[in-house]
Length: 261
Image 1 (cartoon, rainbow, N blue to C red):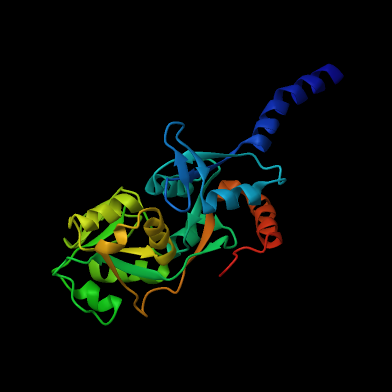
Image 2 (tube, rainbow, N blue to C red; image 1 turned 60 degrees about the vertical axis):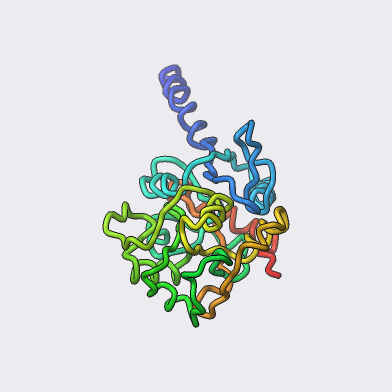
């Protein structure tokens, strides 16, 4: 009887160990200044969010692994809830609140701005963002699968029938989708492949700091009807578990994040 009991325990033990040590996949994409990747190794080596994540997970005894995966695929994985996976710099929106467990905020952007080519004659002096959205002669560039936060997401759906999580077969012709990172998107604006894009002010400040020549060719609008800085969170599949998320949230609180400036 004892032998049979020991065999049963040994049979189940590896499964339990595996369940406890299953890593959380932190699906990122290279994006200055948040994640800076070693292009040869295809792995993050620097960046604001990269460093924050390391600080958050330090001493938590939670195994994690960075993985370069497109945002739209990551959100599908979170929805399917088959593996422990997180999007480590996500903005809250209505759909994500339904399908995911979301950490406390870890970072706050500066205000969201509109960026355009200084040489683009189609761009007028708009009084607000909604007025710009109504102009059917110009095109907005958006990143595939990317949320711009509740307020902007709602406006994009209202005026363009665009939703980050959908295949968007019926979207308006004056919204262009891309898989490019923020540098690639900026270059599309400079090459007039699209007319304008949305970006956090801290992102474009960082890009200009690295390449001052950008400042000569771009202009921005700072509209009052755009968010005054969105909070970024860990957006995780429910498989990560409330207990693990509680550990993460306690560490976020201990680190006094986000460090707003």
